[in-house]
Structure formats: C-alpha cells, structure tokens
Image (cartoon, rainbow, N blue to C red):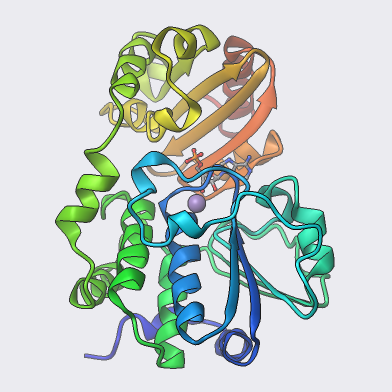
Length: 339
Ligand code: AMP
Ligand code: MN
Ligand code: MN
C-alpha cells in the first residue's frame, strides 16, 4: 500500500523548500499561538527536539504558559516565556499551528522583524497574512488534521530519526487536534501516522492519561457551575454555555481549566452549533465555537475578528457573556437563517 501520508503533501516544491531550510540553517526560534494547545506545544517541541538533535541552536518561545496537562511533554521546561531584546542575526523563525503573526502574542512584531527567514507551518483557515512577506515560506493547508503531522512529514522527508521524545510530542499533537480520533478531520492517514509514532515510542495510555485524566479538581467544580448555564436555541440546534468572572472566583479556576467545555454543549444530540462564552476578567470575553456538519464556525469567528477551522473556531472580544451570546446568535441568524 502506498503511504497515505505522503499523499498529504500538495505543494511538493514548497514542502521541499521548507525542508531544505530546516536542514541548512543553524539558528532557530520556534513559536506557536497564544493559549497554546497540544498541537501548538507538541508540534513546536517535536520540531525543536529534532533540530536540537542535529546540533542546531534553538530557542523555543511561547508567550503563554504551558497548560498543566501538557507539562509532561518532554522539553516543556526549556520553553522560554520571555524574549530577549534581540533574537540574533540570521535566525529562522518557525511559527507553528498559527498562520497570523498577531496570534503569536505581544512579541509578534519583534519576531517577524528580526527574523531573517520565517517558516510558517499551519492548518488554520489561511488569511494570507504572510502572502506578501518576502522572507516567509508559509506551508498552510487546512486539510492537515494537525500541525504535528506536517512536522512529522518534514522529519521523514529529511530522514531525521523520530526519537521517543519527538514521537510523544507529535502523537500528542495529533490526539489533541483530532479529539482523540473523534473529529471530522480524522483520516486513515491520521491513524497511520499515529501508529508510526507509537512504533517510535509514543505511549498512548500514558499520553491519554496526561491529556484527559489529569485535571485539577477546581476544573470540575467550575464545570458544575458552567453546565447549569446551558441554553438551547433554534429547536435545540444551538447550545450555549457560559462562564462568568464570579464562577472563576468561587472555584479558583483559571482560563486553561475550561479546555473543551464547549464539547459538553456539542455533545447534545440535536446540536449543530455549540458555543462557549467565558469572561475571566470583567469585560474580556473568549469564545469557543464548534459545529458538527454544515455550519462554518470559522466564518462566524471571523465576523468577530477571530478565526479557526470549519468545525472549530474562536475569538476574543469585549462585553459581558450575555451580550456576546446575543451577538453570536444574531450573526448566526444572519449567515444561516434559522437552523
Ligand atoms: P478554541 O475554542 O480556543 O479551542 O479554538 C478553536 C479553534 O479556533 C482553534 O483552532 C483556534 O486556533 C481557533 N481560534 C481560537 N481563538 C482564535 C482567535 N482569537 N483568532 C483566531 N483563531 C482562533
Ligand atoms: Mn492549536
Ligand atoms: Mn492545530
């Protein structure tokens, strides 16, 4: 059987250019999107280990902290959360799981300006942010189920060994972004690559326990409060959950404790669109959107200045949770009518 994974590369020329840069250059800064998830951290560390093993000089930078349940990933202790004034000459900036500079965080301008070369590896809706950036090679393909998969293909192409730490990071990236093989992006290639990563040393049971069975108690207390806010609209096709500053205060929970709460709204049988609106600090709202079939939630997120994928998107805005919920319902009605 031909390798399912090699079929994933649509733009061979660009892919080979990226691989050649990784191979020939010596100084790298790796970064990912703010509020990093398993794909962001996993793909960044996976590539970081591989470059490090080739003797290259690598800084791994994430503005935000690593979520607790990802701390087990090998290398998280080496992630920098503060950037030096200058990153040095002739540095390649690799941006993983993020296609727009703004989503790197507050240091995005400095990084983009100081890098002599930029490599973007991503699978979000491409808004062309790097299209006119001469020093950028942007490999962005929405058909990839995880950025970690793109990293794995690059390592295979370069014939760089996939060691156990690399396999652990990339397997976690794939598990995170396919929702443990439940999302619509789960393909035969996803299983094939996960299988190869297990052969290379990733331990599925250990990783799943870290990812899904290692939450702090406060998360479950917060979940109890959030679930009580459930509202359904459009004959049960839209479900909304909310978290207020008060709930965070009572439970002592932090933003990362709400990871995948939107999944509870999505899990209702009639639901097509699931919305989770959380206000951690008064007036600052972060929204997670999910859909099951035909609603392109990235379009809705885009209307509010955010982005994402067809079935999973998000944005950040100002207001309180009720106002933001109403605005989303209005936008949904505008784009799709009554569901
Ligand atoms: P989340 O609900 O935070 O898990 O995000 C779902 C998807 O939407 C992820 O693929 C994110 O990368 C994307 N996303 C979330 N927030 C934003 C944002 N403010 N801007 C662009 N994309 C976002
Ligand atoms: Mn991500
Ligand atoms: Mn991703």
